[in-house]
Image (cartoon, rainbow, N blue to C red; front, side, top):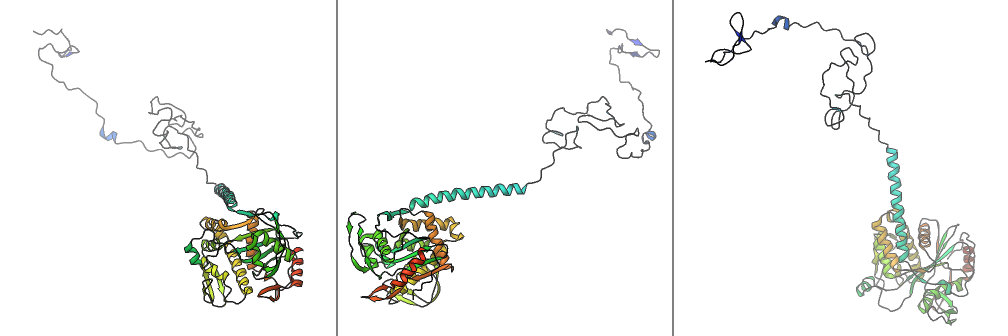
Length: 440
């Protein structure tokens, strides 16, 4: 029995909306639908010619599109009422971070800012300023480090009866045979011997002035008068001690008596004192990589260990020390003093170069080797030391003169200074005049 309510039926007996009155389900029925004409579907309206740039279909200029505004087909701000899927705000995807930017980006995204050109002038300026600041810091640190290593053990204020000072600056430069800090192996290698105490192996006066620099060697065998003096340790007055070799003054009471003796016999005031020992001398030469010398004549000396061929060659520390100490091969101390001048000037010329000063791998070993064994007076600073080396370098380049103290003869194997020439020489130095005195 069919329990469904009676449905409606049309004239043909078909029921609509209520189902079938039969107990069996109603079968599927064909539903009419509209089919488009294939021939008409393939026909498309003719394309309109493109509009000139900047014109709308209405003939006027295309209105400017504002950010976020969609334009209709007629070029104006019409809205077709459909959501384009644009997400307001700037999320990930087109128009947001990580998406395309610029006028063609979806959603009318703001154009990306153009990249600024690289300001190379500014970058170079910053780099140079940083580099100069770095050099300044390193230079200041090096200055204080080197200044702290100077051994200011000589007090020239204790020297009595000193002559008046003149123009320019006078340095007394001394090479001593000090073996302090040297092992037995070093003494054997450098042929220094094992004699106790210290003596001067070389002495020279360096005058630095506006009219040229002058280097004057003082032979160690010079016959001089050792005047009265105040002992550097005892504080008691001693002397005079009469005529002796110049190097005896140093062995009797050290640097202060040596300065007193040089001033007494020359009348020239000594402003600064600098002394270096055997070991320090050899270490400086090795630190700068050796010193090139042109030796005019081959010579040998068993006592100093010298054994040189003629010609240009680079001397290491051991060879350099032998070169400046050799005297028996020449038969005279005057020849040795000339070699000492020649070598010290070459050493200063090679040391005071940008290649050494600006290279920390050369500068610090050189300063360390020299300053550890260098003894100066209490008033001498690094600037004075630099002036001394630059003056020695200038003499090598021809800006100045190197000579021996003028000699007039000998007495008991000691060299006698030529008094008139010495007096003229000292007057020229005190007046800072160009030296015209000859040592011949």
